[in-house]
Image 1: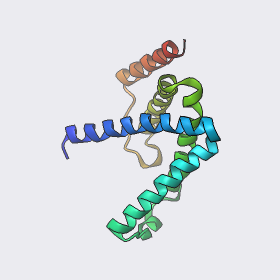
Image 2: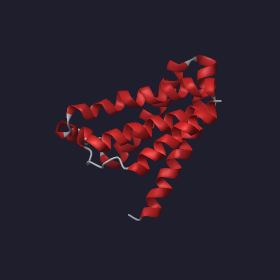
Image 3: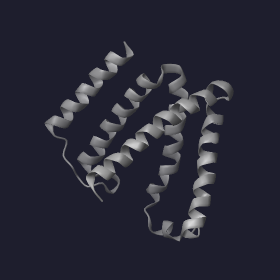
Image 4: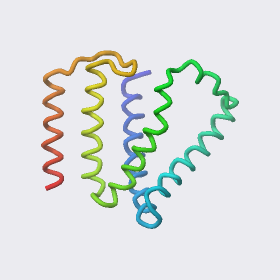
Length: 144
């Protein structure tokens, strides 16, 4: 798979997250955070369930072979969606996502540095550290 293709897929994901956050913020303002998370996960879960059944027969037997901690991906997704739904209408898209992306980057750097949860070890370089400092400065500028 070409690098450009992967960049395009990642960019589409980023666009979808920003659009989803704004839509969830509207639900959050009208009915609440828990309800916006339910609509997001309920609707997404229903749709992916149908797609999974149609394309693969809905076979989840392979889950028996994955490490148990990987199943925390679902609850972590709930935390992410709830944090987005709650923070976006209160902070705005740019400040909320500035903080979100910086926290993601720093956490990812630690996961890479120590090879946590099966990640390949990738040392934190000076340029990565500089990038994180620039992001922290950006958060400060965004929230001023």
